[in-house]
Length: 617
Image (tube, rainbow, N blue to C red; front, side):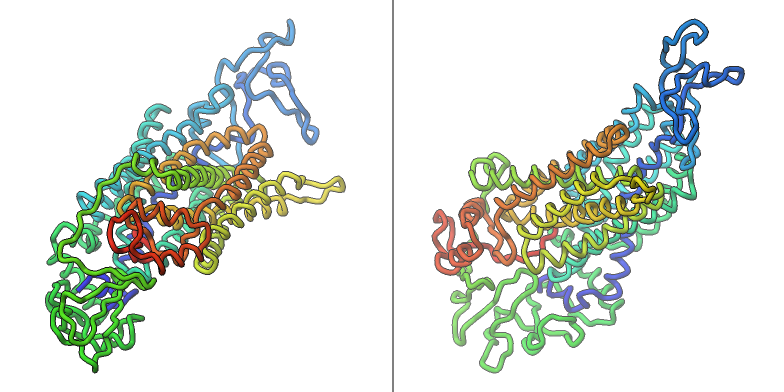
């Protein structure tokens, strides 16, 4: 029996899967989003700072006054008089700075004087952290395939926790930056492994929702960080508060199961079966002996009610090898959830006449000797004009979306409405953004919803610019300003979610990991650039919003050149993908799949590899 069939029988979303899912997902998202977003608090600038002039000096005689605000002088942040009794010549601060803030007790900015000419260093450290995340994406994916999802998840989680604790005790900016870089590398191992480990315990029909809840948990983590930072105003204590709980997951070694799919892929089917039996007992379900053996399959009568919940399924034992599909059987067309292929056999036919029919109507004879899969590289992908164009568009689109997403998140505290409240709302609006993206892509596909959401993101970033903080008669418009800003954040979150679904669907099966990895690299690069928008926003937030708005609108246009993938059979080879990419409408693609099943470069008889729309990344 296939693993996906067995997962249905134990309950597609039973109590066991629910407990394991949240044990993996909560630390897998919260312990990642906290270090990634904590730069807002750890590298926060104080509201007031100026040169430290000593106790016996008067400020107005030592520091230039650059403005008056509510009758109080605003002193220059970076310069002091050389000798005010002689002339007004100035020099950089010589004895450090004086800081005053209602939002922070201590940040890396105030501790290491990262202001004035060195102000960019606070955001540079975050960019270097994101470089670590980007590098970790390549390492984690390879290692999780080689050594197992659970192994890499736990090693990364505990390593990230230890490194995060060490960051709290570092005494220099360089040490802080290096340790944060290493934390970023480990953090990506947690992100990648947690998503794969959590979703692979479900059959295909439930993996989309597992991924969706993973995204919701990410937004909840952002929301939770706001009250944590509000209560813990010192960056070192906040660092400990974020990372120490990771060490409390030591018991995961005995509790969390390894991915059953990975165990089967390395030939350890017996260990996968043990996990299945544990889950079945926990969910109060029954499984046959040697459930993953090829000689075990679903009993015909149980196919009558489908695979909705698996509550009425029981042990069984017939195989396709046996000539037992007679006229009384309810399983003449049993749809296996594991691969969405219809197994059919006509009465009295021999085993050689058995066929595999995809649900899109494409039929392929089962060959005794399977043709060896071709090996592809990135160069092969770029040689195909249409696939190369799709890859380039997706790389650019995901880069912009990531840049705007992280840029809006980091700058949310600069828009007004309360420092911690603004950040909390910044996390809260991610939840409706994810919900909207999920239902829009399921109902209307990928291209039009993604384009529409990006347009909304661009428009609301632009609208925010034209709303003043206060009207001429004194009316406070900051709440309206913040609302427009947060709608833009909600939209860009939805766009990010759409690309997460859409990107892997553009590539053929045999090169999907490579193609997705390339596009995800550019998404990570957007995260590397985003911290510098905070540095720019200190001087001109409107300029940053203009950049975000224009880039979002331009991206909305270029994604229209990407093919629609909803309800389309996913290609297996580059030749099939290139052929499918040439179709300009969904109807043309469907017509090609129905009428020309054997006319693609002569590679084999199957036009498109019938595969579930939801993929495990």
